[in-house]
Length: 126
Image (tube, rainbow, N blue to C red; front, top):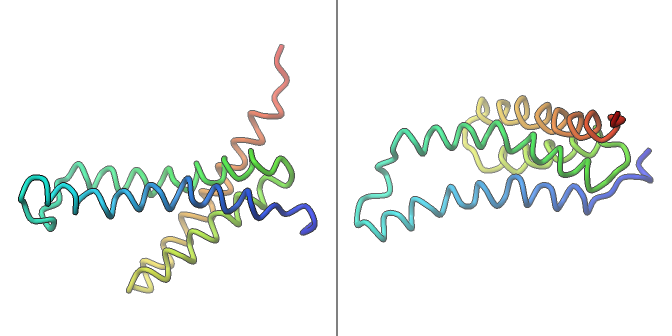
């Protein structure tokens, strides 16, 4: 089971689906505040909605990408991508409740993304 585990697929999916989008969300307000001269603490509702959308779609995208890159045991690769993202996120937050929420969203989201890849890749075209 673990012999077919492809850590490179998990790492690439983590960076592409989690690290880059969240990095952009952390850096963009700083750049925006420098360019416009406004305080970076003034966050609009659009940014909050984009953050929520990213938090829901990132695990699905990460699981899908990990499954596609690995081509074997897609659900395991999706779950491990979500687990890696959850551990990193849990280390970055101060609340235990928020850390638990990341585990409850990211791991099932990674599995869901991997399942989507498996479902659409095994479909036989008519």
